[in-house]
Length: 327
Image 1 (tube, rainbow, N blue to C red):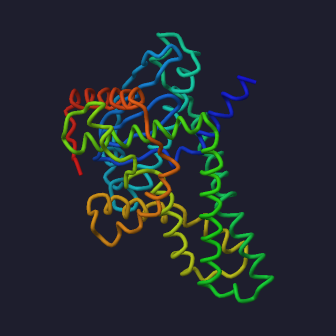
Image 2 (image 1 turned 90 degrees about the vertical axis):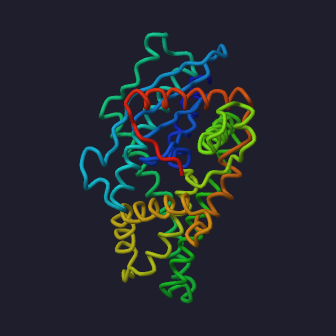
Image 3 (image 1 turned 180 degrees about the horizontal axis):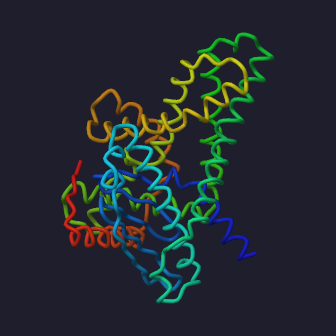
C-alpha cells in the first residue's frame, strides 16, 4: 500500500505541475515539489528537500535561458512557449528528484544526480499533454456540443464558446479542489505557499528570513495557477473568433491554437505582474482566487526549505555573473 500511495502521490503531482510552477526568464520563480521547493533564477536553479529524518538535501545546477541559445526564442509570444517548455522539463526533473529524496530512496551520493533520460521527459510531456487535451479540450467540447444539440439556443458562436469555457473552468476547479482533499497533496500546496512567500520576501529586498517571509501573502500573480486560469479565459475569447462549426473542426483548432494561447497568456501574466494596476491585471484575479486552494499557509520549516532552495539558486547565479531583474 505504501508503494502504491507513494507513486499515486508522484503521478498526482505531475498533473499539478502547470499549476505549481512559475517560469520567467528574468525573474525569480519556483515550484513546489514533494516535501520541498525548487527555485530558479535566470541562470541557475536550486532545490531543497526535507529528508524523512528532518534534515535537508540541497542541490543546484546552472540553467541556460532559451533566448540566449537562439534570439528568436526571445520574441514575444514565442518566448512564452519556449520558457514554459523549459519550465515543465525542469519541473519534472525536480519532482522526480524530490520524490526519491522524500521517500528515502537515494544515497547521499545519488542525491547529487538529477539527470532524467530523454525518453522519460518526452513520455511525461506526452502523458501530461494528453491528459490536458482530453480533460480540458475534448470533454468540455463534447459536453457543449451535446447541450447545443439538445437546446438550439446554445448554437450561437458566442454562447457556445462561453458554455464550453465555463465547463472547462468548472472541471479544472473541481479537479484542483478534489485533489486538495488528499493530505499528501495538501502538504505540496503548503510548500507552494512557502515558495510564494519566499519569492515575495526576495522581491521586497528585505531580509530573507523565516519571520520576514511569513509576513507575506501566499498569493502571487506569476503563479502557474494564475497562468492556467488566464489560458482558459483567453481561450474562450479566441475560440469565439474561429469560424469552425463542426465538432472535429473545433477540436482540431483547439489543439492547433494551444501554443498561441499559451504564448499570449504568458505575455499578459508577465505584463500584469509588472503593472499591478493595469487592466490586464484583472485577468490574474481568478487565478489569485484559485490560489486559495493551490497554496496553503506553510510552517516555519517549510519556509526554511524554500529559503534554502532560493539561496542555492542565487549562490550559483552570482558565481555565473548573471544579472537579475526584480519586478
